[in-house]
Length: 468
Ligand code: DLL
Image (cartoon, rainbow, N blue to C red; front, side, top):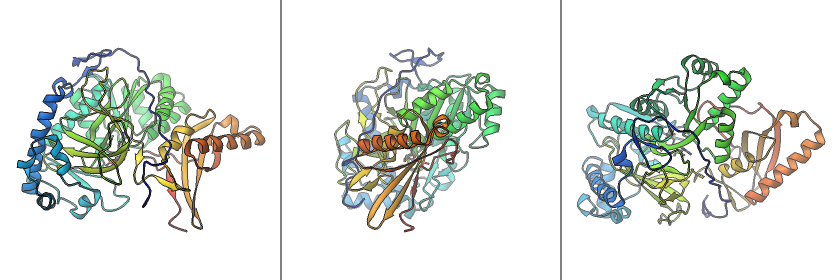
């Protein structure tokens, strides 16, 4: 990545919004939109002036806690000559130091905690497949905040008391299972804590318990949907909503899932370092995820220079927590690329919205000087008739040259048809990808069902370059 700007010369992602139908029962306050339930009217519809005053006040408290109780933050703040007294407006935010994943790793496991251990009641961690895991801790009050934040996006997506919500995220160190569990119970749903995997049993419980809401990664939703179709039991299910998160879900993938399941699917975003799920989530208008701004300040910066970018421009999300007691974060560099909009949403919420994550600065790869995001490849593939929504990208190195293979499943009918047709189709897919990405991949069309399926976060990119 050195020498290349992650956002230069990459094809833009599309952000079309899909309309959602369906009037909903609601026991919460209604927004100004089409009968949108707003879980926390006060927190979600505040005027800008009030919100910013609250943010400054909470930012000052957070900086005070970090300075007083976390040596790593104290050193960084002292070095910049800034303490809580200097935080008098939101403009002071940019004077604060950035926090990175490395800071979590060098202080592993509890070095960033701002409360004594006997006040910590729960910890979670990221999978740690790429190094030392990062750990987030929660006090009782943090768990309460977390439940509220998840309840916000769950009810914005249409979940109400009486729903039967099956959580197919992993329970354990991953924040997805427990975070959704707490929030959905807060809304009043009956929670089925199934956890990830065991697809046949998921389907059995969905039928037996009358599951109305499915919670998992979008890739697992696809996999589960295929298994339901194979079992021929879709009509026996009461499913109407999908709350998907933890990995990128392009609009094209969402459309496939909604069509196959016949449900309304929403996206939600979060990360272990910050709290887990609950940072942002879509409302029924599905045009960006509402950021819980009374709990987090989200900046968008140029990932190379660190300078802020204008609203609407893509950049790296940087998140500061405002209410987290156990592990507060100052200007955390997420490595997630997205953009924000301040335009008012018809739902009535006044919060800034972040668009779908375009990719991660560390996901992006460079071929012939062009930056390629896996999410762009996905968006293109999923719009081509005849392709199945399962693919993988293999990165290879030939001499000094990086190349990539896009392996994608094809509709059974096409695969079992004429070879000439298949070859022509492969050429068409290659050409479509080339014109969208500005570089030519090697495309391999493979039989439906032949690529591996994931039960959690899908692993789409296989990097074979190191082993050369
Ligand atoms: O994935 C938290 C979560 C759980 C969010 C359940 C939503 C639902 P981590 O395992 O720490 O935490 O992974 C965080 O996942 O930096 C993003 O790169 C990615 N990610 C999370 N949500 C989304 C999303 C959870 N909606 C990392 N779209 C983040 C795209 C997402 N990427």
